Amino acid sequence: MDILFFRIRRSVSRRLTPPRIFILSFALVILVGAILLRLPLAVSRAPLSFVDALFSSASAVCVTGLAVIDIGKDLSFAGQILTLVLFQIGGLGIITFPSRDGRSCRARSSTRRGATSS
Image (tube, rainbow, N blue to C red):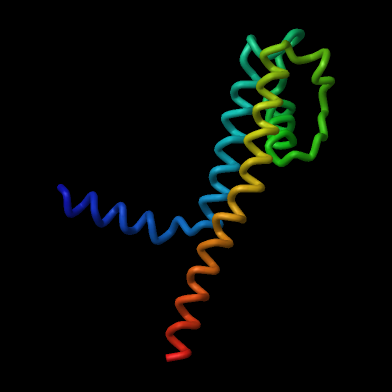
């Protein structure tokens, strides 16, 4: 059983490269945000369609600021706070991930230089 788990884990870790992790994490946050925006707690008027909730969530996470709904009127206070949280998560992801990836690229290049200069 442990061998099977180890093989599955190794296979998944080979396929989950840093760019794939970045894209999947954004997709997951967008999907969870859309589901939360569909909850009755998040809306003040009629329920949002899934497409409107998905677009609003994607727009917030990708920090574009586009909206197909009037966020001030159509969303409750909880929905507005959720939108702000999605903006923050998206902004932090956009800033944090490249700096993390840049450090790993520098580490790889410095080890390569050390190997070639010897």
